[in-house]
Structures are given as structure tokens and as C-alpha cells.
Image (tube, rainbow, N blue to C red; front, side, top):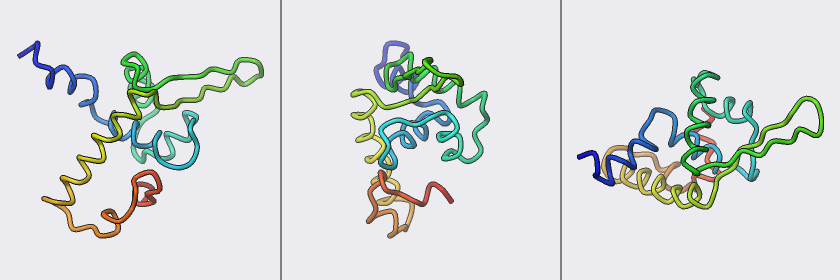
Length: 121
């Protein structure tokens, strides 16, 4: 099983908060988000876990970190890579499955995840 592509892929994105971080980076109009913007959009995540997951997703090249150290304080911005953007399609499929089989949420069915306000509640 260790060589199974599904197992290997889930080892990358299957950890708690990973998919939600990718979705949070996708949501809204900004291409880049700072750490505190991500934390604010991910209700309940601790700074330690957010930092750890961001590092893991960066190592897997799903997100990239841009550091601006030309001023103090140093600014770090996170954004999706091409691989991360492509993975958003899989997250959309997960949403579609949930709507088809588990949840009756018309407001979710007719809203693009990029403009979703439900995640902020």
C-alpha cells in the first residue's frame, strides 16, 4: 500500500486543515494572503498548526511563500501555485459530492467557492 498513489496523495493533502487552507487561499479576489488573513478565515485553527500546514503545503509545491524583507516588519504572502490551483477542482468535486449525497444547502449549490461567505460564519 505504501506505493499507492491515493495513499501518497492523501498523505500530502489529507491532514486536518490542509484542504481548508487551500480553499481559503482560493477564496476572494486577492491572489495572495498574509498569515493573519488566513488565520482569520480559518475559524479554530491555531497559529502553530497553520504555520506547520503552510510549511508542508509549500514543501509539496501546492502553495508558495513570498517574503518582502525590504521593510520592517517583514511581510510574508502566500498564494496557490499552478498545482494548488489545479487541486481546487478536486475540492469543488468534494463539494459537489457533499451536495449530491449528504447536504441540502441550496445557498452552497448556487455559489462559487471563490465568492463563498458561508465559510466565514
